[in-house]
Image (cartoon, helix red, strand yellow):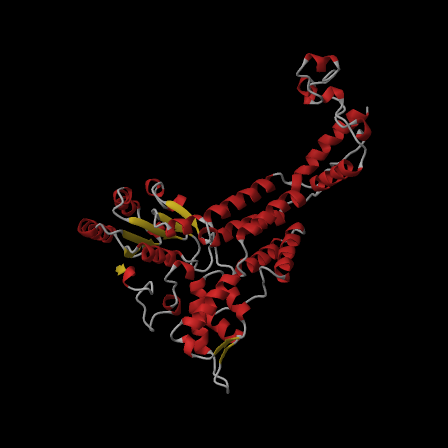
Length: 441
């Protein structure tokens, strides 16, 4: 349970029997790869670590993105006593034992104590309550790690005493650096002649998770045969066997990224929820940013569904907010609900075409002015000049409609919005047709 990280520069007591991810865990800040938004030069967490002023923290992010590593690096840099608990197996008694030990350490030598709680979202309210006083009076510096939104899973009093830092899935280039470092520095792998033939497959199957990648490649290396030159060549076959699944063609930064998002959008536009959810699954499996997917659905809800189902944009925006708050993997369910609904909606691009036509007139059409009767007249001079004269307040007329010109004189016959006969827009079309006929009369 207890680790004195300042006793060694390894950051943890590991043996050759430990998993590769543990054997190659970074020990100092400059060895940590990724999370540049927090650890880059001048970024908030790096500044706090270097100044040795790290407060209690909640790290929120997907598995394998460096939450445990950062906790250990912070403790090592601060030369603090480091205690680690797993919320899955620890109880209030374990928490009390650490707090009692921290009290002894502080009274004996004024030493600093960092308590790291992995999966803190699994702690009950009573367990979290037991930490409050000790965090507040500085007996311990708490570092919690969670894959769940802490605003839902961590009690408000504890959350208010800690800063929340969001960790992102590691990008392929970060995973590539971590892999190179493991092959170069690991005491077992560094003495072998290893060649990895399909790095792209490995990075894709890792899904932004460094621990998954390292443990997977360690298994794949064991499965790989040794060729006549003494090289252990790791091919796609060994990687897929190690991960127990096949790598689908998907490159978040390449052509396939654009091909699949295009197929996804066109499937929803074309009214095929089955195809839409398949392409959605391909993107999720390939590690696509779920917020990128949600953003594209918000656009589609306006561009391709529009007023045929005005609720579509509400659902799409709610989907984006929900995915942003709960993250993955649960976010996949929300994405699927939105995708299947949007694919099943009646469609209309009338709003999209209306704004494009209007912008065309603004850019290339005649110069126009606002008709006098539509202008405000906040001063006597403006009233004298005829501003607002003759304006008819529509609510004073039957049906809350009155015949009146709203477009500039040069464009008064233009019709930009042409509703379809689909869904709710059919009702809108019927109402506008009646108004248009009234204006023509």
